[in-house]
Length: 176
Image 1 (cartoon, rainbow, N blue to C red):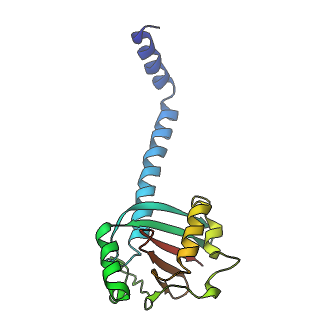
Image 2 (spheres, helix red, strand yellow):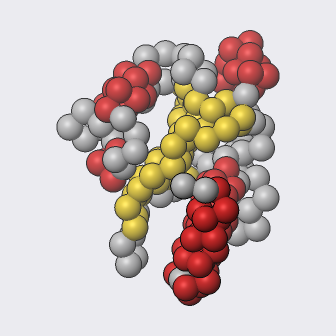
Image 3 (cartoon, rainbow, N blue to C red):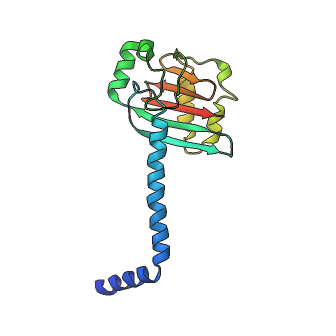
């Protein structure tokens, strides 16, 4: 088929389906904007001392008045090295979320292993709300949280932050 005929058919299709093309384009743009907003929303719940370099996965379930899930980010190399050098003292001032006017404050950081009562049936309850985080990652996170070398804190029972320098990730686990 001639490339001009193909081009003409595409133009005819677009003219005849303007509403559908507009709706689909708008949906794609708004979805992209929402994805960016969601990343920044969760990233702002992490104290500024904990620097990230990208998103691993954000997933969860939301209901009318509740929700649960995880937001996980890759730690940047400098943060990993600084945590490995300073240990728990790295987190001394990492108790307030960045740029949040509503004041999200975390409790004192603790070294892992986490208390056994944190887990329900071998995992966090919030992990049951996520399908995007593979079982392999869930297992790695679960076992790393039970070994020395990582750090965690919580925000008044609503969420937990877990920093796993050996895996190079920080995880916000939320449930309410």
